[in-house]
Length: 341
Length: 226
Image (cartoon, rainbow over all chains, first blue to last red):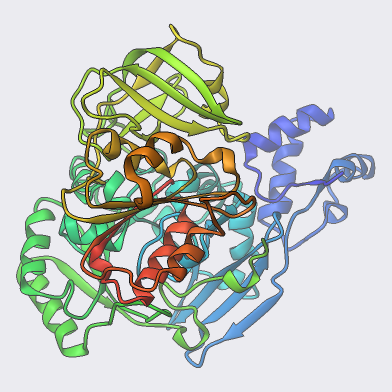
């Protein structure tokens, strides 16, 4: 019998579990402490549980941390970790150091169903969903874990296509019984699956990032098949009607392609579409992938594009490319070579 | 705390409809119909649910736009919420459906329609709506009994209807996957449109293949089953 992992369970799930096992209810909080607040990795080390309780727990469960099987380090200090998953597949996680910050870019699925033209992960298709434990493990089980300052769901997969587990994972990260991180240090990035977006806005306080990449419907359809089912207009209508308050942030990700989406017409249309939305744009350099017809824009055009958006009153940043030499940069994560039929 | 809205602007409106038919046309694959209440453009989709406990799922319409009913094609996903329930519904049972919407639309221009499995649905809708002039339909499946509607398509489209079967062989059926077939074609027209519909991996593999054969990516429109 395959034993279930404790790591990744929420407090309410642990409460149900301890009741089933006949333990006192407060044991759930004790287990949560061991899972999320202490540096242990086995049930045997949960020493404030009785020996008998630990034995009963170990009959059905394992602690559930999974070690990475490979790590690569970029010349810029970015690291890429390879983790095995429960379904016999693999995922990648990037850790990006920057001055006093250490940002972890986590995966939410093995592969991706979304098929964006510019993304390496999409080329491997979809191999499975990650559990909340497998998502949180990517943070808790890297050597830099205690120094992690920010978490971005921008690795492999579409978070809103695995929203139950993603929301559980953010609960574990932000709850007092969990990592107790501020939700303002977490950004979940999506291509804009509208039902998932609505639920995420309602049930989470983390920042939202939306992959825009072009403001034009016809053009976006060719880059991102999701545009056919959930057009950007619908996504923006949701966001426009949402009160983000003063702390929560929405940003739009925009990979800048040479001659495709880097024109003044795009600036003008973005300004029109984003009118009334307090947001910022993150411009991203395109990191070429094999067999792509797309090219990244040049630095001068990128700066001009940024200036054009800022002239329209839109806060705009250019994201630094990190980890490109180890294929850890935006859009490059892939475990296709490890996919077995 | 996050502000909670009673209903978001684009939150899907679902209407109750009565199932007219629900037929298993191939093992695990069903063709379900209900009365058409709205006009639609072939290639569009509807959202379907059996209750309000779970969000609806999106299905391509699989019927012509002159017909009195809307049909959808679905296969049972054993670990899914909706399709095992949907498969047990019988005529007279209620269903929750959205109005048709979506942008995977046919044009009168010459085009290749490329599908695997139940991805045939939007193309069959276009076909039933009389939009198959100048079209070539490539349908891939693992087994010979998965070429839904093959008799009608074969009769009407003739050589422009190509079945590709990866696990079984038969005369008039190309042995192999859709990508094998496309690789066997010497001259893929570069000025035509290519519509792809199916699972993510098929779509990205076919799209990469077409791009590698100098088809402009602007000519490729894909609908992925999320």
